[in-house]
Image (cartoon, rainbow, N blue to C red; front, side):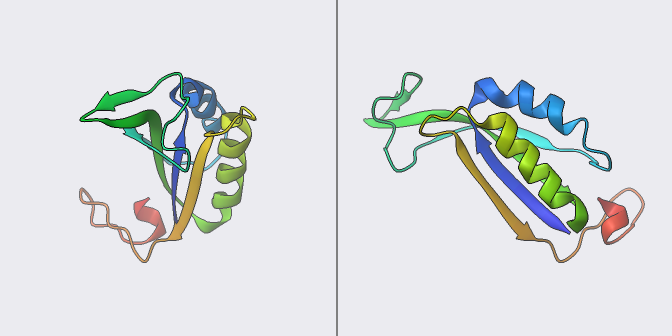
Length: 113
């Protein structure tokens, strides 16, 4: 199983979500509104948040848990749909998940996702 975390520009969230709806076998995703900064430290960003003298840029964070065989398609979909060609398009991280447990049924492993 894989855990995919991606940080994208908020205005790309709908486009990415609609494209991910077309991925057969995708069991769901979580979306969070986050803020932070990358290498450029939010300088020259049109949509930045200044808080306590630190500049942050708003992003949408997408978290997906999936079967190994879906990871590449999901990552490619996010990368394609979130791309603007400008600095700060975001990042995608992929890690391995050891186990999952569905609380309501007690299912474990891939059936739990």
